[in-house]
Amino acid sequence: MDRMMTLWNSVPDFVHSLVFILAVTIVLIISVALLTLWERKLIGWMQLRKGPNRVTIFGLLPGVGQPFADVIKLLIKEVIIPAKSNKVLFRIAPAIALIPAFATWAVMPIAPDFAIAKIDAGLLYVLSLTSVGVYGVIIAGWASNSKYAFLGAMRSAAQIVAYEIAMGFALVGVLMVAGSLNLGTIVAKQQGAFLAWNWFWLFPLFVVYFISGVAETNRAPFDVAEGESEIVAGFHVEYSGIAFALFFLAEYANMILVAGLTSVFFMGGWLSPLNGYLADDNALFHIPVLGQLLNNGLHWFLLKTFFFLCVFLWLRATFPRYRYDQIMRLGWKILIPVTLVWIAVEGLMVYFKIGPWSV
Amino acid sequence: MLVQILFYAFSAMLIASAFGVITARNPVHSALCLVLSFFTSAALWLLIEAEFLAIVLVLVYVGAVMVLFLFVVMMLDINVEEVRKGFTRYAWLGWLTVLAIVFEILGVVAVRRLGIDATQAPRPLASDYSNTGALGEVLYTRYVYPFELAAVLLLVAIVAAIVLTMRHRKGLKVQDIGKQVATRAQDRVRVLKIPAEKRE
Image 1 (cartoon, rainbow over the protein chains, first blue to last red):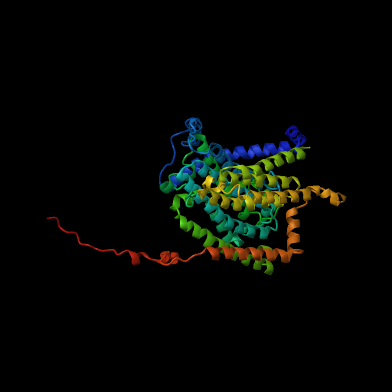
Image 2: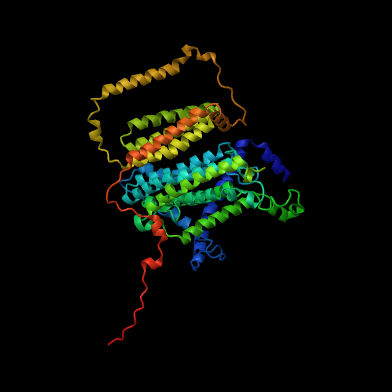
């Protein structure tokens, strides 16, 4: 163990970064695979079905083999490129959709005092990269040279521009609390009990952020860019095989990202809910394994992210798809005014030292 | 060394994509080239440690402005032949603009003559220096009035754009969402009890 540590410390910094990047990417890809399974299982249970239960791994765990079987199927399928499409753009569109979803994890404060890149303008970096992701959808829709795909791209562009504003305003509230754009500082500033986390004092912004996040990832009930019942499959209707799988991967990676960001911005990221109630040197924290679990750590971040992912799936199992004009109405006329009002309220709270500013 | 390699790589990409903007025949390709040139200039700004500006360039121009641009350009049905008709007629105007721009660029590049080399190159700042914080401090103290004025100007522009484009057509049917939400089942559905009839 000691020799491992000395070896680890002796290699240059960029090797550390490379190892972390690889680890995060691989974990993300595997989580996406398992998330697709969990989605089908959970929605199945909610609708009194069983969900996928045929493909097993070595005869155990019915259904767990399903995502891997799907991946193999998609990998060996032919990728059909439409004759009159724009070949170059058609090929790079899935990559453009996928890269921002992974690149944003660079600034994610996964565990206490840890992020691959602790940059000061982290929140802006997150916002700018998530807005780049829409290019994948737009370019895919346009390059396919198909009416359905194009309609999907247009819908998605208008929707993302609309909800990005609400999302940005909701995050203005967060950075007013933290006084910093650094995601690690944002988590650290929420130090305290369960009610000290941002969700309590910024509840309207929390709700707006999560709704905008759902809209931004093109998930149900805001998935009009795909809209099977209206425009077949929207922007990825012409994609097949692994090119389609990349869009799928991007969508799920974005879901995990938004769930993770919600937990960082509003639910205290890696902070433990016991953190404010017990003193730092409480005897409970010194119990060998249990103490570690009760204390701050990576597992709390994962747990919160998992919770928000389940909410994503729950929404999908519950709500019918929004009508397009109502999506626009919700974004522009309800969510944006709500955020503006709450930012003003927050300004007053800062001035009169109420809530998290009282200390 | 690495910084220099990166600088030349990004500069080459920037120049190539800027050429692409004006030479591409398809307007969508032009717009995408413009996106790429914004991206590469953001990378160049990162190299001179202007992180905040670089990220904001991507956020504002790539993430918002160019999406709207593409949105419009993709919907246009441009007849390229039609556009080219006036090409030679207005060529003199184009050349004039080119000359002006070349002159301006020369003015910037040849500025050594004016004695700017007397000033030193900016010193690299400490790694914990946050230019986001520094920018915020200056914006809200020294330049607070120009900053607020710019904000008000932008707001006026938004309001003006909406007012100019908003038209009220007569006889337009609009849904009143509040009314729709407030309706109850009793208002819409009448449950009748119809006695069963005997079959002949």
